[in-house]
Amino acid sequence: MITENQYFDGNVKSLGYETTEGKSTIGIINPGEYTFGTAQKEIMHVIEGELFAQLPGETEWKSIKAGSSFEVAADSSFKVKASVQTAYLCQYR
Amino acid sequence: MITENQYFDGNVKSLGYETTEGKSTIGIINPGEYTFGTAQKEIMHVIEGELFAQLPGETEWKSIKAGSSFEVAADSSFKVKASVQTAYLCQYR
Image 1 (cartoon, rainbow over the protein chains, first blue to last red):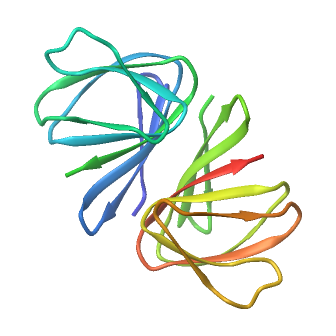
Image 2: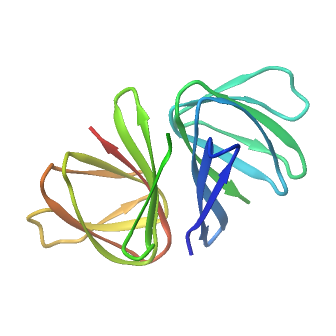
């Protein structure tokens, strides 16, 4: 099954699927700033575009360009900002 | 705007967006075999999973694993097969 999800009034949309190593989603983030909560550990990869991420406990915004990734621990929250539509892969594992 | 598309009875779903270089979609392909037509040139990247592609005019099936890509000319058709749910990026440019 391919699940469809949307958040923040449709400014973030994703499609969910299963791999042999765990669940993943791919999605698009519209320009803007968003706060996400994690239930489990997430590995976020930028596929196209660029994200700026403020990770749990940090004040600095870090640039994550296409081809780069960052990890977020379970049960935490993080912020992302995008200035262009940005495609990402999120791996829950 | 993030567009939502589905094909083949929901066995292929994608999200469309714009980049400064042209349109792109990211999507998921369920296990199965599908024939796609192209209106313009497409660059297909496998993000997670694996596709087997039969390109226009070819009889051989080529494996495209995560991190690899293939190109398809405009106004042609190609076949893809997947044995696991596979995530892709398609760049129209």
